[in-house]
Length: 120
Image (cartoon, rainbow, N blue to C red; front, side, top):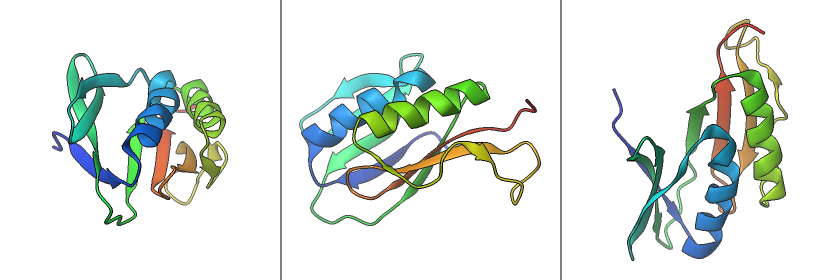
C-alpha cells in the first residue's frame, strides 16, 4: 500500500494553483504548505506532494475518482487550469472493460490521470 507520493515541479506557485483547481472535483485539497513542499489530500491526510526542484523527471500519477462523472469533472477542471490534453475521458478497454479514465499533462509535463473502475 502506498502512503504518499511526491513529484518535482519547476514553478511551485503555478503548480500549486494548478493542482488546487484540477484536483478539486476529486475532493483533494491543499492540506499542508511548507516552504519546500505542499501536500494535497482528503480527510486531513496529505498523500500527494509537490516540491520545487529544477530537476524534472516526468511521472505518471493516477487519482481514483468516485464515479465517471468525477473523471469528466477532473478533466474539465485540469484543462481550465492550464493542462494539456493527453487523453479525453473515456473507456480504455486495453486495461479492462470498465476502465474509465482521463489524462492530462500538468505544467511540467507530468501525466496526471483520474480513473473510475466501476461499470457505468
